[in-house]
Image 1 (cartoon, one colour):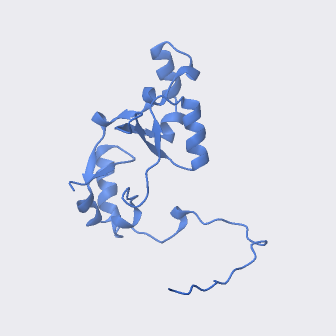
Image 2 (cartoon, rainbow, N blue to C red):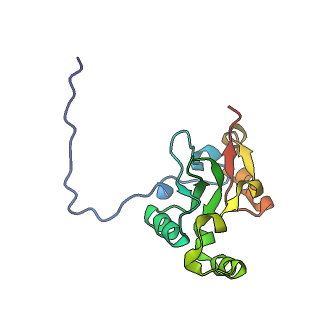
Image 3 (cartoon, rainbow, N blue to C red):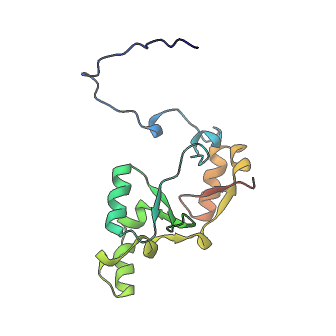
Length: 152
């Protein structure tokens, strides 16, 4: 049987800041794209169900500090993508007006980008690429996000 040891601790009374993942590391356009992707094999993606109200979705995303979520149905089938920008833009009121409903009646499904309108890139190709390559691809698509696919 292995004997474990007690690790050193420090008092946190003078601590003022919390490091955020995006503030760690110095990256350039030449850096490996693998350094900046969120690998769903390692970290479960943020997901919201399609029938959640837009106000609830906005609150959850802000509290969770996420800028995009995968939209799913009750069986967790992938339906699309919703961004914080979608929820904070004029798109919300424009959608409510075009549907003839009040803003409070909108749900995630009304504002998400359906998977049929999304693009993906092969995981292996991205991990073998540079950040600049991915940014150029996103620029060409006119998209701020892209999901990775894995044939395995």
